[in-house]
Length: 456
Image (tube, rainbow, N blue to C red; front, side, top):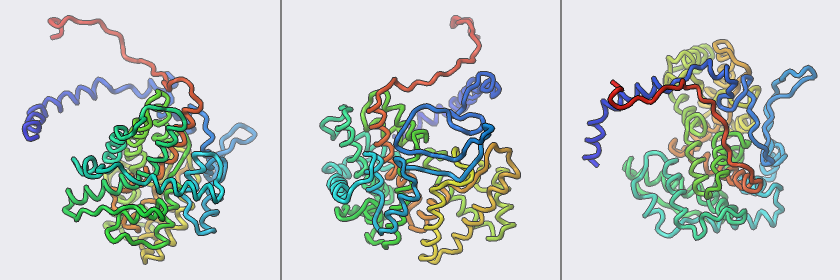
């Protein structure tokens, strides 16, 4: 390894120079995108998505069209299999039940389960919530990573080798694989973190076994905490986060990635690993980590007054605060403008958790930023639509109050979203069309081939 590092160091100056060449020869004139009517990011100029497919799994609404054909923004709506997300949440919350298993059933099979169906599904996931013998020792504990998303992706790809029928893409086999991964993701993420904490932070190595009588949310808290203990409120709010993160239309980056990769006919493990690579990105699943770190910086440098927070947000936008990226993390969404329905739900329960834990001062910072940031962004940026707090804004706060390590924020997102990925993979396979391959317009000028001796 040391010899390889010497090789890397030797070529570092060349890499720096050739990186400059890469940038120089790969930058495309922004005006060409407009000239060729290219929908960058598959978005129209007004922010609406270019329709690339159909889905029955979930629906997102953020605007209506008036009689003159004008777009009118409205509070965001989210439906799982046609059921409003708020009605789904209110249903299991009022009955004081955990909702993630019910939600996963709905996403996979299209209808809410009966009590008997839900009991059987819960038992199936409990029975599947295990890893192959010695998997933790042989796979997770070998070459521990500093990023848990890479641990999960590597583990998922390795599980292919433990599957007796990995390449069979019949619906029954893919359903079995998807439900196994749904059950295994809490183990892959928490065990990956415990190994990381042991090797990189000199912590004790703690590997708890899941309890088959507990829900996904309960087991996650049991596995990540050294004493296995948690309150009912903590588990129910984490369960709520899982429900709200489980699915969000076929067009979000990681789910669309799953559709694209699935359309090639590849195996489930490869498709899920590709989605994990997408979700890891700070523009997607990694956003809640950025929210948490931004608030750490805000609280350390800024009093909790309207004027001070307004100034901090202005400096964020001017790239003079926090990470210099010019972004207010957790504010704004590619689809929603007036409100994100998931954030609206989480806001109420984040306040309950803050009151229960005596963290009202922290919650006040979030409330002020949620109110002030859209105003400042509107003043300083030219926008085609409004902005508001998104789901990452409050989930970051909740995970902080639950004392979940930041290294597990995005993996926890994947613990939920694997339900949506599995449902969409089955939908793609059940409606087998062409391989997804959008067109790209070439804009490089043609030039002749030069013999080696003539290239200067």
